[in-house]
Image (cartoon, rainbow, N blue to C red):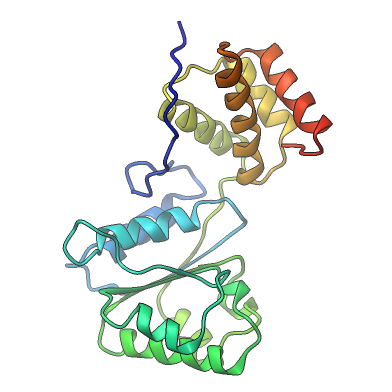
Length: 238
């Protein structure tokens, strides 16, 4: 019998909760090195499509390098709005520089110079730096050229979980995290009907899971089809 839980699911950004597959194995290995204070490697750049796990790994690094072990190190996404002073203040006493979504850094000379300065402050004294974006360093649009060059000095790897076996593993991990059983035929249905991006895959599962919870029904193929039709009717196609 499938069990139902009323509490919300809060994602835990740890290495143990990350799904390791062929397209993410190198990234996990490199991220663990950065998260290890005793490892001399101190610079990592991850790139890959949305939903591939870059943010998860950055936050796992931040968690591991937290000052007293009870709270993560500072983390910044370039999707946020921030000034040079706010950037400097956020990382003033941080044990590591963890910056996400570098492809979204605004075309702003002051921010470009400010990020380079903060990076240089950390990297120049051997402190840990972990960054991520959609594109390889040379294809990032608004970075200081010096920062692009420095990123290429460190560990650089692509994160990609878009193959079917990886996507299948992710779905099963999500279901396990929610303590529900998902038949193989439902997993295959999601793989066929969802887009290639992991974020779309997760969205499809979440729509099915929400309907299952709302109606207190087991997850079955008919339920999965109902969830998809409901999403399409509401203008949201997972």
